[in-house]
Amino acid sequence: MSGPAPLWRNRDFMLLQAGQLLSATGSGLSGIAYPLLALAVTHSAAKAGYVGAIRFLPLVLFALPAGVAADRFDRRRLMIASDVAGAAAVGSLAALAITHHVTLAVLLAVAFLDATGSVFFRAGNSGAFRAVVPPAQLADASSVSMARASVVMLTSPPVGGLLFGLARSLPFVVDAISYTFSSVTLLLMRTRFQEERHPEARTDLREGLAFFWRMPFLRTTVSMIAVSNFAATGIPLTLIVLAKRHGISSTGVGAIIALTGAATLLGSTASPLLRRLFPMRAILLSEYWMAGVYAAFIVYPSVYVLAACFAVHAFTFPNTDSAVAAYSYMLIPDRLLGRAMSASNTIRVAAGPLGPLAAGLLLTDASPRITVLVLAAPVVVAALLGTLSPSMRDLPSLGASPAADG
Image 1 (cartoon, rainbow, N blue to C red):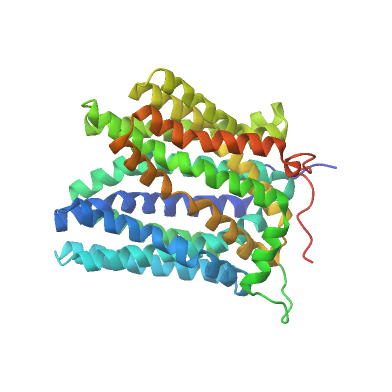
Image 2: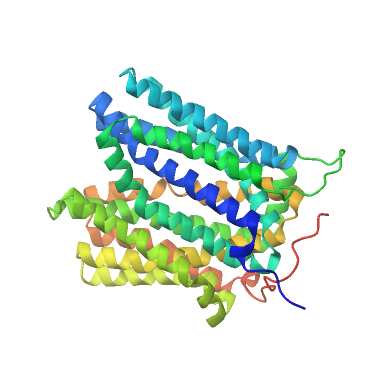
């Protein structure tokens, strides 16, 4: 009996990836343009920071309600409505930029609305992804998605900066258009984004949270990712501060940060091969044990050594993330997918803001060695606890069927 067709021949998967590539690229362009526009309008780094902070706020406020919406309503319609809201928000900002009527209040409102739409879109996207990918290909499909995100992370910031230099409105115009392409690809897809639902089925938030908490594997791996995000968000700020202290130009700093995108792209490309060569348990733990590489910086505290260490660490991010995503799709029943994945995402991002905060405070009063040690040590501890955790042993095959809808 032959296996499923290759992913590149899966029409709906390719449509989903194409739409997300265009949409994520547009968001990446506007992502660099938001702080640039804030600086141009307010001439204040602090106020530009407000814009960056408010773009993070919807992740905290709406991730769980978005999961409920994804399990209660039609996911395709939810995603298209999110695209329309995002296009309207950034399109209005583009129009105001053209007419020179942008204020800080406008920027804050648009950034908040744009990010809120993205939160609801991602909640529906989990179901769409699971619907179009056969169980045996979930890990490979997750690697493709990670590679797409890495390409966007590598290319969007410099292109967005270039477009902003040509016209302040241009990145937002392109972003609005990209939302339109995303909606078109969703309309062209034939697969239903959710299984048939019973009219009496409960879709309250507590049920999704309870399911997530009852799964030791999900609790363990997502908590470990949250700890790793503490370092993954703190190390880049440490790199930028050290680079500036060493007199490296802004272009040089950009090149150092872009090295991370190149490393994650390489890791995404290598993920299928690594899963064939190593046990899945080793793949799941690789990101955490790899944090030991920062010992090289503690021995020789050079900004270039830290850049190399972070690139090596970043290589493992997509390997672990794609494996965790694949197991999540396999273990969570469809009717709970939006709520359980939203709970997962909330825990994942919880420690993210703490990394830059800790790095900034430590670099003010402590040495770079101590800073990196404080950021990396919890990840190594997570590696040890994960290795000893019973939930990480005897993992099921990713070729198994997804969880039954009980």
